[in-house]
Length: 148
Length: 340
Figure 1: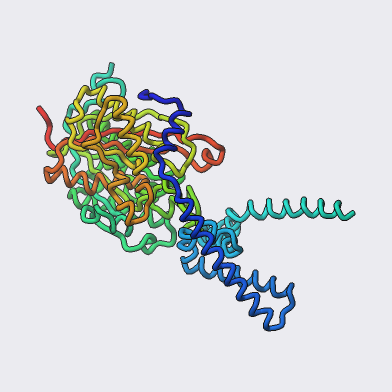
Figure 2 (figure 1 turned 180 degrees about the vertical axis):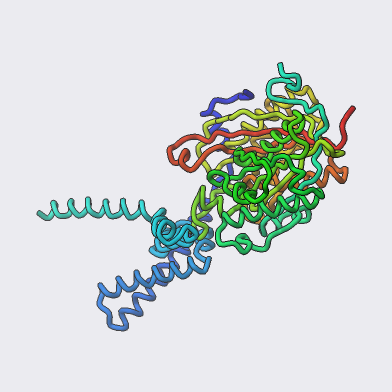
C-alpha cells in the first residue's frame, strides 16, 4: 500500500489541512440570536404579567408560547436556516427543543404515523429527555437528603 | 497469470469497449452549479411530484435510464445487463427505479465509487464476451441521504466546514462492443484502505488515501507517464480531500497537480452555493462524468481521462459503534481514440 504515515500521523495531518470553524463569528451570532429569543420570551412574560397572571402561570404559558413559535417556524422551513446561522443560539432555548422534536416528525411522516412520526419523533430529543430527567431525579434525591 | 491482467490491480481491455451514450439528471442545486449546461435534465424540486425522497430518487433513476436508452436509440431488449447501485439501505433507489425494466440486473454497492465499480464490471462482462451492451447507473439524493445518514432536514444545526453536500441526481453510461469510442482501456480496481479517520463529517480525509493508493497503483501497474492523461479526476474528495490527495501523491513522486481535479469540487460553486467542502454521493462523480467529462471528450477537448470515483464504506451503525471509515477508489481510463 502507498503509505508514508501511521494512522496517528495521518489523523494529525488531516486535522491540520481541515478548515476550522470560525469560533469568534459563530459565538457572536449565537450570543445575539440566543439573546433575541430570550428577549421575545421576556416580552411575552411581561405581557402576561400585565394581564394579571401570577408567576407560575406566566412562566408555564411563556414556555408553551415559545414552543409553539419553535414549532411554527420549523413547519415553515425557517428554523433550520436560523440554526445554520445561529448554531447553539437557536439550539439551546426551548424553541430549539421544539425544533428537535418536530423536525424528525416531519421527516419520517413518509413512514406512517406509528412507525414514522410516532417512533422517530424523539430520535434527537430522546437522549436529552432521558438524561435530563435522570439528572433531575439524582439532584432531587441529593436535595432531599441535604434537607433531611 | 490471467492474460488480461496488467500488474497487481489493473486489467487492460484489449477488445474495444466504447461508451456509446451517457445520461444525467440532476436536482435544482446541481442545476444552479457551474456544470448546469451539461446535464440532460434539471428537476425543479427535490420531491419531483412524489410522496417521499426515496420515491423521488427511484423516479430519477427510472428517467435517467429511459433517457439513456432513447439517446442511444436502443430498446430494453438490446441491453444484456444493468449494473446499478446507490447509497440507500439495500440499494432501494436502483432496485425500485429499475424494477420494471425487465433486464438482467446486478445490484452493487461501492458507496460514492459505485459508478466506477459498475463501469468496471460492465466493461469486464463485455470484454469477456458475456455481453454486447451493458448499462452502468448510480444515483443519490441529498434529502434521502441526509435522512439515512445524518439529521432531519428541518433540524437547526450547523454543518462543519469539512462536510460535503450529497448530490441529487443520477448518471448512466451505456457500454458497448459495437461503438466507435470513447474507449475504456484500463481498469484499476481499488483495495479497501482505512487510515483511521472516524469523523463522518470529514469524508474527504477518509477517502483521500484510497484515491492515492489506486492512482499510484494505476501508474505503477501500467507504466504510463502521468502526462498520458489530460485529466485525472477523483470522485468526491471535496476541497479537503483533494488537497490531501494531491499532496500525498506528490510525496510518492506522482505530481499530478497540473492535470488534477475532483468532481465534488467541480459540480458546485463551493462558496456561493454554501456546500462547504464540496459535493459527494454516488451521483457526484456519475453526473460529472456523464455530463461534463463525456461531452468534453466527445468535443475533443479531452483526449485521455483517468476517472477515479471514491467511496466511504461506512454505515450509521459502524459510525455509532465508533469504527473508523474504510474507503475505496476505482480507476477507469477513458480515451477518445485508441492508440495503436
